[in-house]
Image 1 (cartoon, helix red, strand yellow):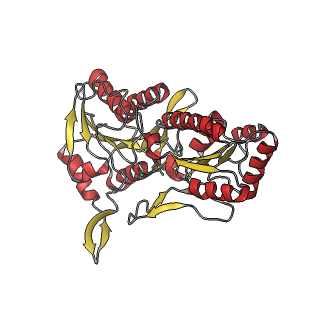
Image 2 (cartoon, protein in one colour):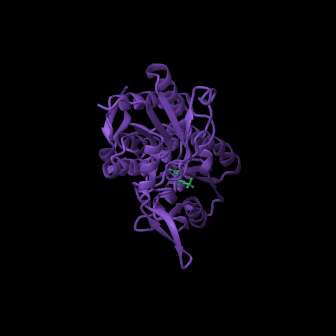
Image 3 (cartoon, protein in one colour):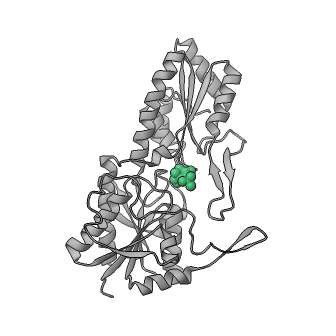
Length: 365
Ligand code: F6P
């Protein structure tokens, strides 16, 4: 087995609270336990493509545990296998620049990479491992909680807390004005944030991508509440929710081969329909990137710290091509390929959905 002396770390994809806790844990474990060097890669895979790599010591990670964002920077655009290499007739042409990644790894004598990110970042890590032979270990991050190979990703708990707090705030103003409040949360094609924040915040209607909704059911629920003397309602909608037989609501389509759809706006669509169909004054709020900002919760700090430590352990054991994750109380490793095969989404027949339905929550069905 090759002796491990230098490990590179990058944070890729959308940021989320807890990234700095992982970086700190990786640097501390490497320097304190093993006496090896850590190299920070700037802005995700962009840093590997453009040779933006620098050594990190404990001074650099001092005080970052409670800080949101990532001190390394991140990017959700720079895929080395589909990288813009030219512009022809005003359109970007994409090519494979993974040889540049390989050169950066060799030049800096990195024995392994720790890739902290969601499905997109891990899919690239997997390709770097299988196609280029670069030794990688993945750490699962995303507020969406849609990555397999772990019971939960770090960042989710913080986003959930922010969304819940926001629902609480909308609750009081909805009640005062006798309005319907529609709140849109992130999550892409998974409904975890909407489902759990909806439950925690007492949402009357929860709309998730996994259960296409019927407007008539939502209207019925609001009328039932009115008949019950409840003159306001809270609707929590995931950005990826869509009506039965209908389309996703897309804020913008962009020229990006990795992810051309910018989701957003379903709350406005749902809110307008509710107002038209019930005559009740309705407002919508799109929570947006607030969910990804600020200080991580204690849960996320601890999970991120454990992931960081175990990622270094996996590197030292030369368990490459694996992703660390939480199963029950323990940190385990799963082949990245398995973890990214199918996104982890809410199961419509799961216990948590049945519980919410039994309590009267409407899922638009
Ligand atoms: O994957 C995390 C996430 O925040 C999604 O919930 C959301 O759809 C997307 O990223 C937003 O991406 P961007 O930061 O590119 O707007």
